[in-house]
Image (cartoon, rainbow, N blue to C red):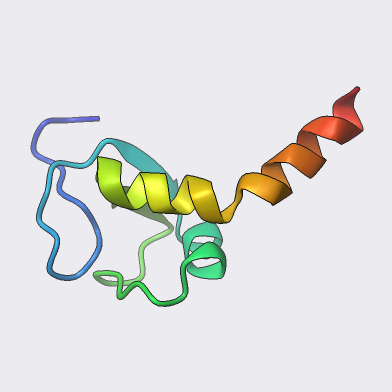
Length: 67
C-alpha cells in the first residue's frame, strides 16, 4: 500500500494496510460508515482484523471446497 493511503472508515484516519472490495466489507461489517462509495476501500490493521474475524467461517467453507 502507498504510504499516503488512510483507512476508509469515517473517523479512523490510521494508515491503510489492505485494500478490499467495498461490497464485501459492507456485507461483513454493515455497522461501519465508509468514506464515499469507491469500488475498493482501504482498511487499517484494526479494521482489517475485524473483517477477518467476521468472515472466518465463510473463508473456511470456501477453502474446504478446494480440497
